Image 1: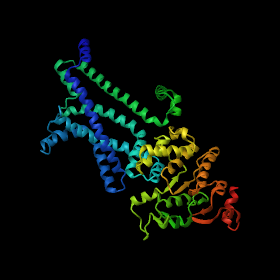
Image 2: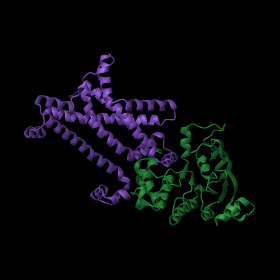
Image 3: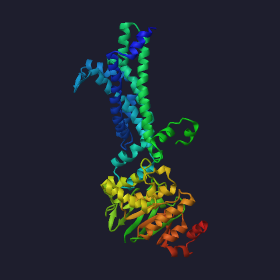
Image 4: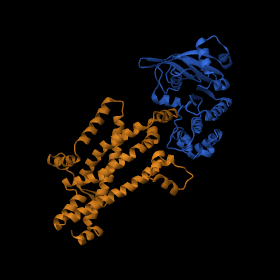
Length: 258
Length: 248
């Protein structure tokens, strides 16, 4: 174990490594964004009264949950190019160049995420009491207004915890994009370790890098879930008091849930 | 007649829930509907504002046909949605939007549906909150309030849409005996102000006090539909006297 190399790489990582670090974050964020939007659409299709629309959504979810995302990567990027269906080109977005394989990876990740999110969001919608629909109807709200203002906000309480879980998984699934040459953390680490023969040190750093990313996300999720508990909070308490109440992990808080 | 309901029939697949219910109300009338559980009281209420579509029958408010056109055909969803606003409804389980505080609950529909400005909706909502005695609680969330307070807020929410008729679906059944009074007081106040109301209730004393008429239903049929005093004094209907006898 070469501690000085380890410390050096950990405290001042190479540009390549830093670029890969942020690539993982932005690939995940974009994929999650599209995944949630598509997932919401598929959740509604799945709840449609029309049998064929329901079937379509069901088949989509089935296909994209069944085939490993690694297979989709190769199929979309390499397969499509060889079969002359579509060749992903690098595109320039203002000053940033988005590589073709990154685009393919984002598309595959989004589509897979949509399938998982569709089920999560469907569960969320089903968790909303029937009475809330009735109340909105009686007040004359349209279907859209009911969904946008009442049902989706209420379903968040059920949707956010598994969504956070999915995002955490997504952050690490990006490593699989190395099979189509996306220079994310895993491939970059492999390249560096192959050049320097410091496999153990480099992969230890890689593990720490993933820990940092997911830790950042976990904190963000805590804040989000805290915000969602707005309806349970006493408006007369200070923010600090409320925060303390929410993050006490003893048995009492678990029991009465406040 | 202000509100005319004719021959409402409702089936749930094979089950014949409402077997031809007719009644009519003048403006400012209060009709209490009593009867055993499962007699179709709630379904009848929901058929009036087309929350459930009746299979047959007609509802006429202020001379305007609701839900079905003159040929007995169901109107477009959008028209029914607009007509439904004329009927405010208060539920047994309150059904307040729990992710919004009381004020937000009340201004939601006026802003989204009636397209009122937030300022205007808020000032109207504050008046309503004063009326039901919840102004101090306007920033609280429903789940932090007692059942009685929630139900009063639900009444305020229904009133914010300026309905012509108010439908109460067992407004006090989910409340503990101590808080029932405060909700009934609000309903009584509305009756005094001349609101047209249909109230499904198990509170016979309350029905006696506020209603102009009382209707009893059983197994989807009207057992009796009379002026309040006459309803409680006449003894000719055995089914009714049995029911009332059990209650007292």
